[in-house]
Each structure stands twice: as C-alpha cells, then as structure tokens.
Length: 80
Image (cartoon, rainbow, N blue to C red; front, side, top):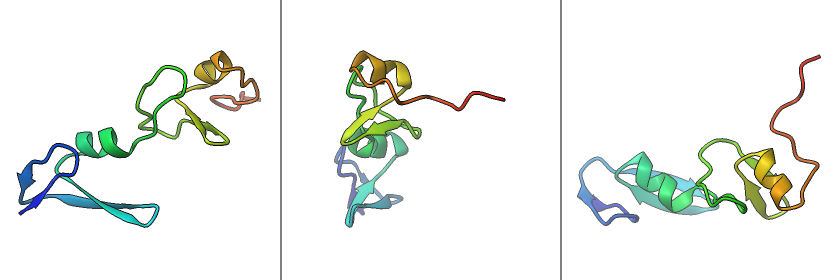
C-alpha cells in the first residue's frame, strides 16, 4: 500500500496526479486539494475551480483581485 503525501495515510486505493512533471500520491480529493490547489492572494481560500490569475498571483474571485489593486480581472463576461 502507498501513503498519501498530505496526511500520511497508508491506503490501498490511492490515486496519482501529475502536476508540473511531478507525480503526487493521495488517498482523497481533500488531501489533493490541500496539497496542490493554489491559494487566493487576498483571502487565503484554496481555489478549487478555475479562479483568476494575474502573473504569478491567484485569486478566488474578481472581488479579491480588486482588494489587491488588480482591476482588470472579471468573474464572468456580461450577457449581451
């Protein structure tokens, strides 16, 4: 059995994620998110969806980006 790299649990049904050329082993999606998901620069939330990105900064929403002085990011395109 392999071990989860986040919690250390030894588990027969681990899964692997390849990210940036490195292979990671987890026993749950929660552990994978805790270890690999980017963190919002403003509020510290783990970003589990697409989020927003400006350079090397990640944001959970445009509101958080605005709090950090980044005004060009939007959450969605307005309907026409």
